[in-house]
Image 1 (tube, rainbow, N blue to C red):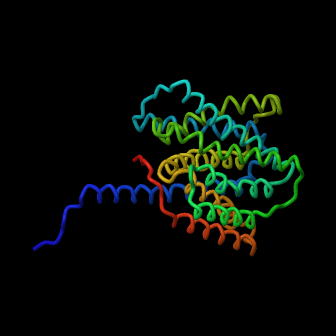
Image 2 (spheres, rainbow, N blue to C red):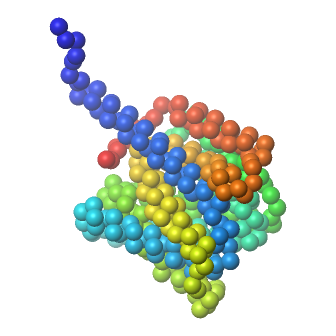
Image 3 (cartoon, rainbow, N blue to C red):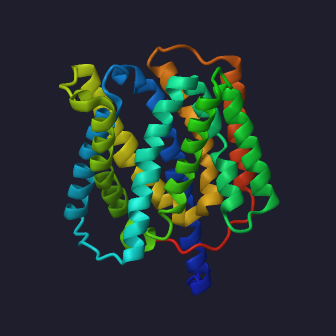
Length: 306
């Protein structure tokens, strides 16, 4: 006699929930690792006008994402005034002002200072995620320590620190402002609409700062670097991150922000930009440890999408 049984509805929902969470873990980890690879391509575009380059990056990304929405049969969704305001605020803070803050912070304090401050994203999201468990808060602190060790405090002044803190606030807004929009718009449309809105905003900033020199014909290396930022870091990483957020919640998903310096280390090694130091490896180990600790905490109930 066969011992197979048909799963009860509760068991089926449990399997679906676990499957969705597993997908969310992979998506969050992949998104933050890809963001970390930006460091590896920064050298290819360092001489290109920064604001014009970012405007081109988001223009290409928006074109790709909008084409994907059309191919996927995703129709235009009418937004309420509140939802429109949230989307504009998301694009302004999480994309435009974030890039301005990172650019200015790098000029004053270098990328190490910015990376260290952004390493506190997991702790900030954990504290803002309703009632985070002590284990998630502790895990976020371990991830922050690992990101700090891997990145190093570097040198910088008060101005650089203030710009870096501005980037931190914008990075948190990038996640929290998207959460109310994702159930209605989905990951693809939120990514596409926010990228499209960033283009005129960045162009306006570029015209004010660089004038007509904000855009020029890129070299082959610059075009490759901008293309990588557009397709991989913006199009792919945005989609993965916005798919993971509703599945995991900002507290647990935020733990994976610690993979940003890990992605930078790995990319540097692959591209021959230098072998990772002992501090790099120790920081990466702390990040992984913190993520494992945080994910071992009981997951809160989430409504997951497909």
